[in-house]
Amino acid sequence: MASASYVSLFAAAIVALASTVLPGTSSAQPLTTAERLSDAVERAKRATVGILESTPEGRQAGYQQGLGLRGTGVHLHDGYILTARHAVERVDGAKTVVPETILVLTQSLDELPAKLVGGNAYLDLVLYKLATLPPSLEPATIPLATNEAVPGQEVFTIGYPLGWGPTVAFGRIGNPSTFLPTVDTRLLQSDIPACSGNSGGGLFTVRGELAGIMHAIIKTDDAQGGHGCSRLGFAVPGLLAKKIVTALLAGKQPGFSRLGVQMKATKVGTRWRIAAGAVFEPASVGGVQKGDLLLAIDDTEIADAAQLKNYLIERTVPGQRVTLRVLRGESTLSLDITLGGG
Image 1 (cartoon, rainbow, N blue to C red):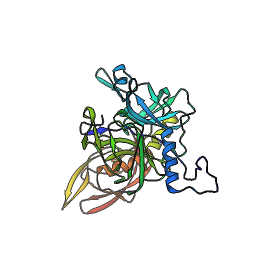
Image 2: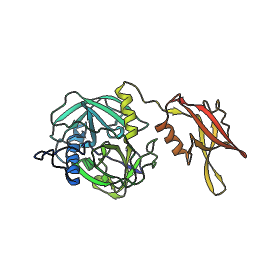
Image 3: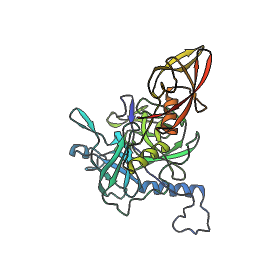
Image 4: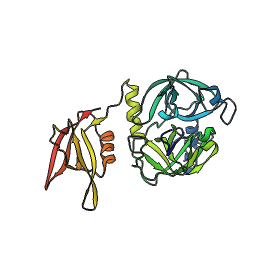
């Protein structure tokens, strides 16, 4: 589970080009909005897999005997399955581990093993690869977002809430830059109905573009077995997921930038601001001192610690040179810093 206060989700799938022609239609006949959405949903269903329980007891606990489902995954392409790390983690003695092999279930009820490629606990993502690729499993045509999600944008998700499905739920993006204590990155907040069991699947645009990977809900309604449901769903943004997947496919761990500042909140007048607590390399080499108020990085205002951390994760790479604007006493200073890795 992501946290005692936050119920993990499952969700689902992928794909569809707005220009796709439905069976039985002519290329000369433009598709209606409803037809394009319907096609996107159907393709997404075929790209969605359920994550099966691994234990005999768990496999008997699902909505159908022998098909105990604990989560959802998205087929990106060539057998690569992306899901949430916490949707596959298992307890091994005193440790929580990511299994080398998982079993997934396609919409056509093919049960298939998938081998671990790699993962990232920082962003709660993990990538697996199927040993065989059945014809029934749809590949992603628009696997990962290239544009930022915006407030009011229509989205949908497909998954296995409470081990049942696949279900389809629709909603809109609310806050595209919100934070929970369950993961070290910003999340996309939507008003899509979701339950325990939607984690690891896709949050899709009406074109079928993968806008994010479902991560958590804030529990608002009790469901069977004490699991929760909510009208508030949170997803790791597609742009961040793309960064992780690209690195893993290249056999690497994604690199994240390190500024070297331990941040603390301090009140200036009526406003809370972020100040430098302890200062380490590379910030100390660039001239940052303890007590400096952090105003902006590369002309982007620093509103809080989460916003600065998010900027470093998404917009920078180790070795990149940034300009940090700070307030020291009555003086505003611009300090050039070459970011470290970590």
